[in-house]
Image (tube, rainbow, N blue to C red; front, top):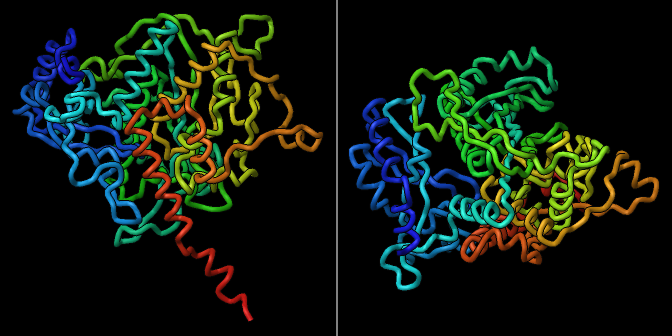
Length: 489
């Protein structure tokens, strides 16, 4: 059978398809968004009436391959990744992701896996390698089979709520003042974040904490960690929720890394750990009737955290944790292209006065390093911002950890000093790439991280991001005018 046929006929899927129909009828859903994730993390797809659920679950829908690259043109007016002569992908829904949209309960949402067209002469019905979500599932399963370990991830997405003019353009101001952890400023955005939390609970996000950060209108709301794929789905869902709440409140939900100079940027610290065992547990989140299938409201719990210390030194992870750190440290330059994936991302890394994680070092609770052990049993990859694609980064982290574990790598000693002071004392510390162009070069040289973007995925990513970098290099900005307009005679 083809990859597509295997996916449609996998054990237990037919029962899930029937359960979705029961939910459609129970909730009164009449329309469904079938969505997947583009190379930049954008949600794309199609809408189909719910009457056609069973047929779509079996046959899927078709959409141009170029949707995986947002169907955007490069600076030479060529479609990125795939030309107009390319065939159309087949999107097959994953029924375990079906959920109702809380802001319009007539509408449901389901993620899909993308495949090559059934009539392709080359690998018909094969997995579409430019489907970043599909890739992550494959690599997660391979990692589990090889090491008996599951990567669990928790993200800390910062973003800003900006005001806008009557015509919808941004005013250039955040809604609140840049006072970190101030409850008064948090309170000023209460109607916004309470609506976000309401919608999040209705879509399976177990919200655990939040605060006002130190930029205008900047909030961070967190949810319980889970396996790397479900967490990526929830981060994408969270972004959709914020966009909807912004529409309702006349604001802009801004995930751009650094829209303001002189204040902090929006990071998305990624906390990770590798586990053996554990069980999946349903969490209804206060919903009397689940507005989706049970899997959307399920979290993995328990098992053995292999990152926990195995010596008396509680600041050092266990052997597998150290090997994983070594793998990530080795590939940190290439990983930067995925964690800091836009031109604007590097405004954050240049602003070192706000604890920017620009140094390729690690330490326990050391925020001046690119990687820190944030607590016994987990470590935090800090060179990630809120514009990143969590599916690409998740796949790359699996590859880096696999490299470290398979080759029994050992990291250098952890740094306990402020990295800036350590440098003054003579320590030679390498910086991470400080531009998108440099990060793309480091990625092109790293076969391990490139393997997380197999075949067409790397082609699409490199094409899209290299074009973005070249557009920036060729653009005249306000800085150019301010600096050079009146410099002669």
